[in-house]
Length: 162
Image 1 (tube, one colour):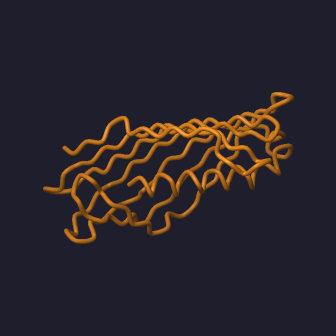
Image 2: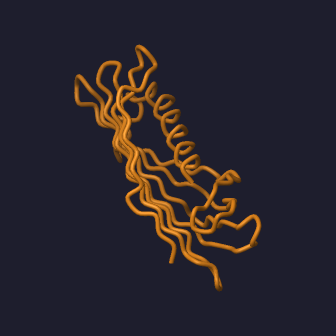
């Protein structure tokens, strides 16, 4: 699960690095937001509720990116949710509907990026399969001039099986 969250965070960081070069164009968008739909690539992760590997399949990831130029700094707000995504237990064959909601707040000032992420994932079991709920809070700073993380905080707020 944590590797999946970190992989999502790394993809988000790459997305910001890529889109950061296009900030003036994005800021001119009349709606103030850019919306992107990406396919879900099969991603396995360890489900701590079941003790088995789970594979995400199908559907798409919907991203909404807002960029606000604050003069000396830039503020990015990224909202991510999964649409029509399922998960399958690789040993049990149990099938789940997956609901993911992620809100990332990113501040870039000079060479430092500060990121705060609230991540929630619900896997709703079909039939007798148990539900899983994960809530994760992440906060970090990254200095582009030295390519180092200067502050990292990662907390699982709730990890439950029902």
